[in-house]
Image (cartoon, rainbow, N blue to C red; front, side, top):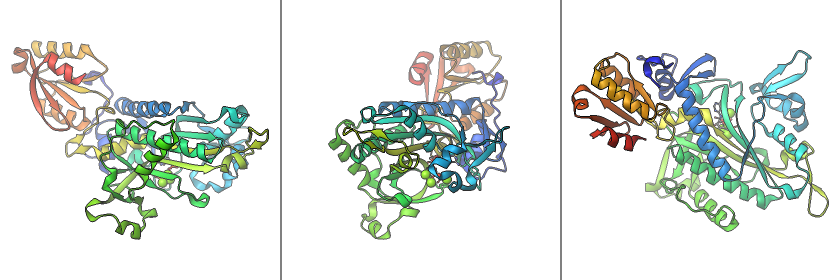
Length: 436
Ligand code: ATP
Ligand code: MG
Ligand code: MG
Ligand code: MG
């Protein structure tokens, strides 16, 4: 993209309405604009970020055999009456009426819809397990929408739902999903620590929230440093082997980790002092096993091996895709702006033409840009060098390719790595080899 022609409205000043750094930077870097309280439009660069996050989430869901569908945002109130949640859900649910006075709602989550969809389709235990997911907008009429996309009212979520024949199989599905989550967050360039979460009235141990550490997080977190620095991408867990899955699960869940809601001061005492990590965290994912709660209440059964009917065991698995855009910035920024992880960045590199209008500089920039126009943001504006440097730092491209009249004469560019500030003078080919 050429910056001179792009819809990328950067701001020099901090917007007064933004209280936390990610919100400020998302507005200043031209990623989003608010259109109503807690509702945002995603501008071109922001949309690229959202798509990059979604794509990594999708690849890791597919890897554990979850199948992508796309369920609608609008749901019928009758579906929710079947599970008994229509009245229970409360004022966070946006309720709508159509012209025939039929009651609808804008989905805050999809357990009911997916259970109904499953029930219409799957009739036998032979077709289990099934895991369905979608990446779709949700609406929750949050009491206090705030922190930009971190607590929006309309937000993008990946939600997956699993159906298994029995508890053992449901647990295996849950553990596979946990691995998928650890891999997803690692690929997104952040560390999200899984913490035991409240399972509410259903009880049991099978609910975990994934939290990214950030001083502005809404939850207090306590965890054992043993949970840091594990490499889940290199981890060869055989997800078809229940023993391997169990060993993996124990490794993740035996070190202490809890949010303030679940914190156990006695167990915390037992963690060696030098291993204790304490701070704030942002919930970016939540996985939950809830057995037959919805299949039973909605009357969705399938035939078993013995010929009788039974209710499949379910779990649900959410990732806050749009919240992650903010949470990643909370974890990856400095005083000059965003520092995008390579995997999420809207552009691989900015091309900074320090002397737009200079024949040699223009030609060199055009040549570089032509190699991969979708990967570059070419700053071809007739601005001062200082403005271009500041905007590139603000927008957080992993690399900056700096083209100035002196080095251009020698056919060379300066390549800056945003994360480290490291600069090197290279030939165009050498720079492209690193960046692309
Ligand atoms: P929170 O505790 O922050 O209100 P939640 O526990 O209500 O979140 P879940 O029902 O577990 O949320 O939904 C799954 C994921 O959706 C969350 O882990 C979070 O990442 C994301 N999410 C939930 N509410 C919002 C929101 N208002 N804005 C953006 N993302 C959200
Ligand atoms: Mg909530
Ligand atoms: Mg929560
Ligand atoms: Mg939650």
